[in-house]
Length: 252
Ligand code: C5P
Image (cartoon, rainbow, N blue to C red; front, side):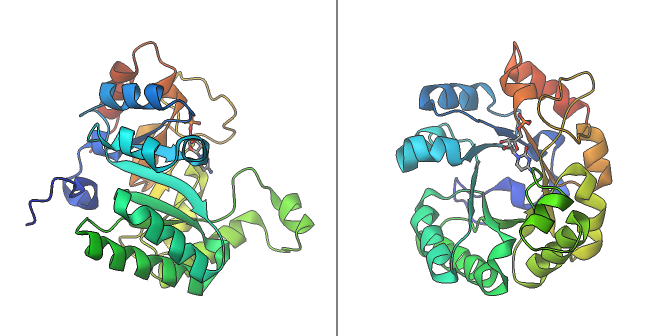
């Protein structure tokens, strides 16, 4: 066992506590707010998610400020470019030691292989744990008509299954999927492929703009590994208490 302080316990799902499965989405451009929430959620979630909004506003310095709280970070930048450029982007963020990264599976097999290889090489070079490189398939904002408009004749479900299988065959560690895609993602991918699932709403919580939601407990039972939960925690009067209640609602 390595004694590195940034070794992610999240990579060992057999011993996962329910709270470790929760990554809280900090959708803000305000570093102070993000740091305050990360501090508040210490020990009651597995990590926090920083996305394009936060990273475009605050860059690596913002990331480092949140990481300094000790919170594992899911850096959701959805890389999509030629293989060489995606590899370069992964080299650029590797020293930050994110626990989870995202790439678009529509970048194709070679892009996914290069992303996974580069993440492994860079983690070794920097002496940090290898991040999970996870794939985004079809954005949940798109429906069958949107796919037809860009020349894709298949349904969203068929295209998600195709891209999930490609991701699984080309070295990615997992994928991001909506709760309703968990079953088809499990069928299309290899055992141990990690499913990172947003669109989670505790019982009685406002759905906001999420159209297809599942409770934390149902999503884990269906096969989700990580639950990405934003507003039900960040907009609560007491975010820490909300995260504790959500973790308590998850069986196993
Ligand atoms: O606040 P809420 O729980 O809806 O936040 C969910 C997070 O997951 C947001 O950061 C959102 O951008 C992200 N996400 C999503 N649906 C996807 C992919 C990512 O809601 N299909």
